[in-house]
Length: 584
Image 1 (cartoon, rainbow, N blue to C red):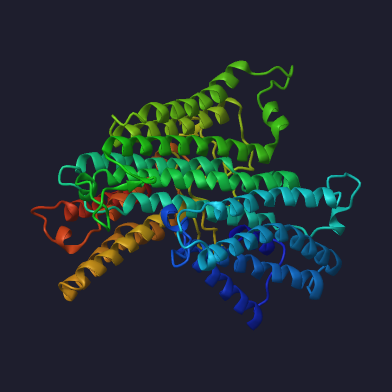
Image 2 (image 1 turned 90 degrees about the vertical axis):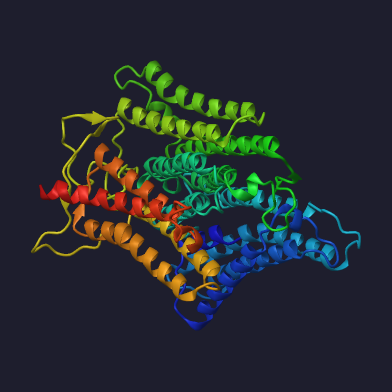
């Protein structure tokens, strides 16, 4: 109703800067905010009797109004006015109305049903899951409606002139928006890791062990996605065919959901080391901990965490492979495993790269099944996650090396460089014949980004930089939480810690990296990749240790201030190392 509808419209049409359209965009944001604030636990949204919770009704109503806003824009294009190729634009606008009307009908039905139950339903109340089923069917019906529109217009036929029936989509815009969406999904994992309640007095070691594995896992998942997805429109699913583009958008939603499950699983594992979990108290009511619908003790709770994490991580791996298939197609993917001279399959490479990858997925699924006994600590569950994701990264690099994949249509493995640069055109030309790791040079020299006398050019902010910035969202949240807790005790002391912590993390991490990247460009090699990962880990620990003054200001009993200072020192050392590399 919100993100995909807006993205698909903006990929074809540009809304002008006038009072009416600005007002519509503001209203759209208001409905999105309303839908977001009413996303509550099942125990709240499912109870929808008279005088009971109104969350489900308000959520449906917000989705209905959000869909209606972009149906108005499609109506404007299809029946009123539009600048451009007017005939095809009008036809496209009317087609969009047809596609959106199906989802709108289901959302309207869910709104009417939940509103009836809320205002005039049975006074007994109780849980009612009919509304969510209606919304689910409406969501599943959308891709089938889009496919139907292709057959209805005959656009699958080769002799049909598609330029007369559809406005071209700006695929570069679509790629960029999907990349930003993935950053938001990965951001949930980062926030889940760096925002945690007070640790148990004996839980530091276990917590930090799980935390470190979680940070590395999030970094590797980011690397897996952006190194496997095309960065040019010629290689993307939306350019290959319309059906492939529809499949990509549909599977991408399952991939996003799986990433959220992995992120919340890390959060649940870290919560095992908080004081409130160790005392078996609720966070607000003081009741026993309620997780996944029941009041549970440690063994059953941990078994559910294990299943949620392992099944979610397996879904991440499987859906990512399906996304890759939408870009290349099944035939082209199989052809990569054939010898060009005699067209025979490379059985050994196929077994090593593909079979072992899916053995990893099967092992994670089996781990979720066996770990549900509950007799294992969160540390062991975290080991399953970090080992599996490192194996996935290794096997994918092994596959690129074995099958000599040098296609410029995929994102460079490095976090640096132009948003549209080829894998071997990052930093310096990859002509090294020395030591390499997984087909990647072990070390290459950095490159000066700008020379005197050259024309200034603005490089694209790449996905690595955006991922780096996600940690600062957690830092800002923790700083805000500190003010909330400390402002009532000593406002001046709270302000002192606020400014001091913000200044330290800004100068040790963000400013240092920004000033370096403004002058130099790191190459795509193993050593500098490791330095970047270490820098992210130190930033994650610095963010984790931003705690209220009663912890950071009491170094004798708590280690938060020492940990924060140590993380800042190590973060500064990483860029001191890079400057020393250039200077000496």
